[in-house]
Length: 214
Image 1 (cartoon, one colour):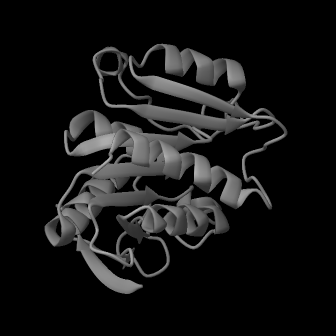
Image 2: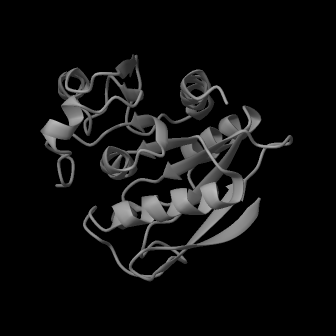
């Protein structure tokens, strides 16, 4: 694991780390973590599992902490300024390894990742786990509906069927507005997938490898 400092467009230094594959990387990936005000950080078993799976498939994977989280400078940006963080993370990993780039977000990180991908053509494929859509979710900016309808990047929308933050019917509605979306509902899964992290990671890794063959 290689520690790295990420510099944002508004002058903050974020902490991150890159896991490179055993062989020369042919693709890159960036992982976006859950809500920083509710314990979210890059250091969660789901994110560890996704990082390991992607590295095994030949991706150089950058995990990082959003602004105001642990050792990253700044403060919580209401889910808006964090889009700058995701963009800077993509800048960083591509400067070192090149593309194509896969972007993954979980919960709060999924909201940030989608809004970044809508504005950044360097994102070649996108996976969103537990996208926050339920009434119990904290208010976050909605992705604009018009760009969604013309967004042709492959997207995997994945959630458990018992996730209160991502109701199945709302996720199906979101997926219906994205031309190249695949939707996967995991039976018996909730928002955190305890003891099922590797199962989730394998599905996300398979999607990333299929859409970005390198």
